[in-house]
Length: 445
Figure (cartoon, rainbow, N blue to C red):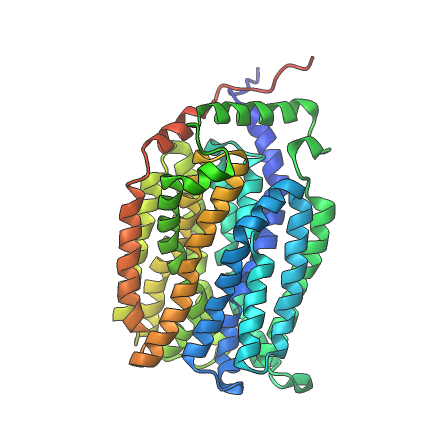
């Protein structure tokens, strides 16, 4: 006689939702992230073709975050109001067009303007997807799902690094265009196509999903209602979220994590080049190495967090690993093998910290407060991206070495890890009490 384990029916519902949504969202984010950071590869040729200094490049890479930050909260509130699929499609199509236009950059001013507009276009995408996942998954199931979605960051580099390196090498001067111009044009196409597919593939809410039965929808509604009942009051409105000290603490923590993420994303090709590698294809292949480890680490670590219901230390430990990796990268910067090995710690640590961190805000916030609070945390956090890209460029020009910026950034990640310990323990308790492993599908009426 075959027996069914408690909660197996509920697990099947969420497995079905995961198969439907997460792979598609993963691919969308990978395309988005590649369009955001491929400027790091373009730098290898663009800087010479347009006579840009490291400072000009750093400002241009960082000014993306100005537009991104200013429009982040309004964008997420609009997503919450008009529907996810419509707004996500708008975001993807506009950023694809602007990213492709980067191929025609001819001056520092044009570089700055296009990077700013790219930030405006993409504002709201990441917090929008994170908010969208709260419509489908309760907190105790969201950690692993969020990690799979955010694994698109390292995956984009695993695929995009070698691809970008190959385009720079193979298509340089083809048709009178530089390799970096071809890279921007080619890598904008997936985002454009996916943006149009969003309109046909995504559903705004659980109730809109014709691929779920009435009983399966009831399971999701019941679990989300049970999670809502465990939340402390006061964070469900936009005003309450904006004035919450806890939300601003999360902003500070994510600032340090985002600083590490974008330092790696925008400067890893340059760090590898400075270690003694000149061939662009080889640089592209080496950039993939740290991120292969990062994908495995972040999914496994987040799955462990879901099983234990613990979030704080699952964020602290990766922050400390990232800090150590940054210091070791600076120490071994002149040795390619050791520098790449140290960057493995950085990429795996900061990617895992990011995935674990995003399980925390969604456990504290709900409704319009979640839309505003998650967007605010991401906005303020992404100032770290602007700081990382701009400060590394300035310090590199000032000192003649990128290593000078890695030590202070390591210290910032250490502080970020310690700040996580100020997050109330009730976050872990709330995730734990939301777990209902004995639940099964309701009996059909």
